[in-house]
Length: 257
Figure 1 (cartoon, rainbow, N blue to C red):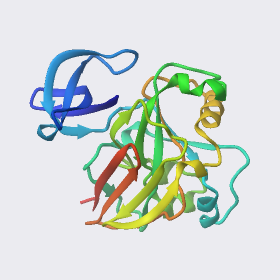
Figure 2: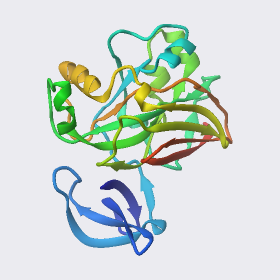
Figure 3: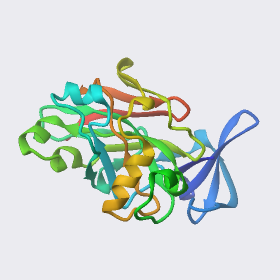
């Protein structure tokens, strides 16, 4: 099932996105998408509504340096254990919403990533049981003010600006994360090209590690790390992250007025 959030003339709703007679439609979910969703009976053609970020997380937990080639391009070795940091939920935006470069930064980078969406409250989850707490998967862009990150010596400011966590276009509950192709394009030019099978720490290890530290809640989002090829974006450009089997997340870039 593909789960999303939409804005329609009738308001904002969680939906299931399905194909009917060759056309994608959004079927309204009553209340929330966790557990076994129930439906209201209202349906819209997907072309007639606007896709929002598929979830508004209570927290976004990220894994740093989870691809060896990216760790190398950043000037270091991959850590033995996962390195975690948090982006504020106010950084979340949906597809086609502009990434806004702050005037204080001279370099804002794209970082295409696979994201995990948690489906139930959980703590101390063994890696072997991680799949049981996952709602599904979506695409993320861990936008980073690289100069701020380097100047501060820690990552909160550089990763935490409003609009610095595009998510979407939907959550796929049946996606297999083991070996999917990940591609990031800037104005149609491929900048990142890798596979999720090259992650150092897999999904089970990541959830086990994080859930030892903090309770995970339904809707929490985990960004699993970016491969090599990160680089800057400038105003007027468009960044698109594609993961095979999931779709494409695309956002324009602008400078803050």
